[in-house]
Image (cartoon, rainbow, N blue to C red):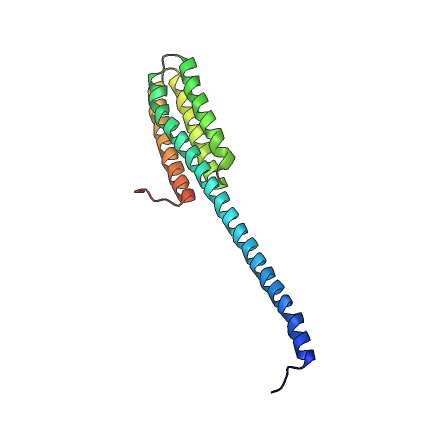
Length: 156
């Protein structure tokens, strides 16, 4: 019966802990990469939620603009409507990409034009009707840009 040479025993005794340490290092690197991916996914989810909430709040305010401007009996009431639009727009501007903010500016501008037309004098009715159509078109384009940004379809 032969015995194992001492040099072989020493090599195995030396390599076994190195193998264990190497396996731990590989597992640590994989865990770190997985944690990075999870953090990025959570960040993206938070960004989506922020944009969704800001978009929904703006669209809710935008639905009241046309009626608010048409039924306003004073310029102060119209200013209140526009103030609500600007406040909701500010939330969108903080989290939306450039394509959405461009469309948003068009909607805010159209709302301001509609409000100005309301108090513009003798041609106010026609100007308000025309600016209302511009507002509706701008709002439709903004809604489409918001949906594209969120990756949702019109039926969702």
